Image (tube, rainbow, N blue to C red; front, side, top):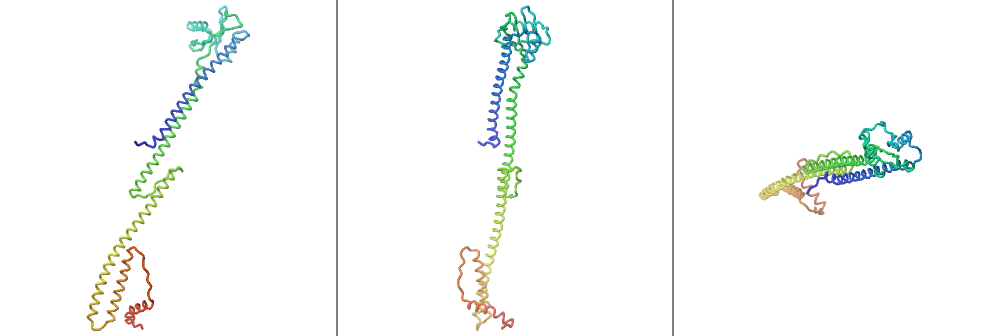
Amino acid sequence: MRWSLRYRLLGPMAFLLLGTIGISIWTAFAAVESAEQRIDRHAQSVADTLAQSSFPLTEPVLRQIRGLSGAEYLLIDEQGERLSTFADAEFNASDHRAIVTASEMDPLSPTLVHIHGREYRCQRVRLSSRNDRKTLLVFFPEEVRREAIRDAIRPSIVFGLFGGSMALLMTLGIGRRLVRSIRDLERHTRQIAAGNFSPMPLPRVNDELLDLSQSVNEMAKQLAQFQDTVRKTEQFRLVGQLSSGLAHQLRNNVAGARLAIQVHAEELSEPSEAVDVALRQLSLMDAHLSRFLSLSRTGVVQLEPIHLGQLIDEALVLFKPQCRHAKIA
């Protein structure tokens, strides 16, 4: 089964991306849990502080506490009078039902109530140093809680999505570049195999692909030189074959001419110097043609010693008729 290089690059990155998303989700849940615990500890700390306080809980005091804690307060005394930090002290019927429910609930179990159309997490505080008939209700805005949770999970989600997306895009870009460069190399090697040895364009990035492209261009250059050498060698071989054939034919002609002159010399009544010179010239030509034919044969040239006086006598015999004709003594 054939796997593309692109998918082999994207496979590990996909697993890494899934791992990053999983870690981001786990981190987000951990951040949510931590934020909720932090908010609950803050609310419990406020409730414990108010439960153990000895200062009078008047409306100005409650408003100052509201500015510090961000919660709304509602104090119900034994006469049923209500001191509230809500912007609008008038409550409708549903608000009254929510307040009654909150005042009757367990102090250790906060519950969600809707006051003035907003959602609060309400907790009843038992005032230990005061008359038990007084009830203090602390309303923590649920939207503040949710905003804190969003702020807690936002970095994890943003990091997971942004980091994973960037890693995926980078992998896609790198994979596309690698695949494109490898396909260019494959196409160029096919052109080289077809006999086109032109160099391929080099990548702009200095990396291993650049080295590989340079090696392919160098190989193409050497193959072009080798092809040119083979072509010249083939031409030389053809010229050698033609020359050998021509020399062989000339040698046959020389042999026929020498045989005819020898027959003519036997028919003469007395020796003729011109006939002897012609026979020597034909013998010399035959020797030259034999040496020329021996060039196309493989083997070691055998060198033999020759007497210098004999070589001079043969040269004199060859040049004597020409000198006599030119009247040179």
